[in-house]
Amino acid sequence: MRQSIKYIKDYLDTIPINDINDELIKYEKDDRKGVVNLILKYKKKYENYISEINRLNKMSFFENLYYNEGVQYIAGVDEVGRGPLAGPVVAAAVILPKDIKIEGINDSKKITDKKRRELDKIIKEKALAYAIGEVSNKLIDEINILNATYKAMKKALSKLSISPDIVLVDAVTIPDIKIKQKAIIKGDEKSVSISAASIIAKVYRDDIMIKYDKVYTEYGFSKNKGYGSQSHIETIKKVGLCDIHRKSFTKSFV
Picture (tube, rainbow, N blue to C red):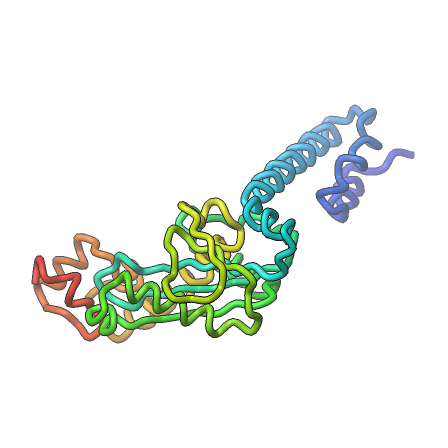
């Protein structure tokens, strides 16, 4: 007696995606339309999985390069919030386990808020260590945004529970740190460690701006996250600055 289509579907749902291809072979001679469609569906799912693993392998190029040299702990560092008119600049440092594959991980700007938050939880659960560094708008005005960014990155690194052997950084070289580092242009697209840092930094900073939206209700911080949208700029022109605005960023229109 042939298995029902529902039974086959329920069974295939229990198989890890990396093993699904071997299981599909068992049903290739079943010509029922429902089974044929199931096989096509799971084959597509498997192809997408392989494509994603290949993408993640490419994003692990720098990590694997240093692992092959004997490095044990690699920290990815990235910042969020260099451009906004309001709020802090935030950096994150993340040390992932060797050979980890977190499906969907990417530059935080290329994924939705919902996906970022899902990945944020996974990264924090899987990471060997992670930390956040934050620098206020007032200090940004005092020392400028580039120096504030460096300071946030150093804060994040100093708070890691594990000392990294090397730091992979998105685009910049952090001055005055003793740890070996590698600046990678578009690193949040090319390194899983930097990408992980970009995601948790983005979620952390977004949550700060959502909280500020409840305090400074006129500016729409929950939507614009402090960036210079047209409505945000018009509001500043109308009601002025609040305590979390960067005065050095708003001189041209205040």
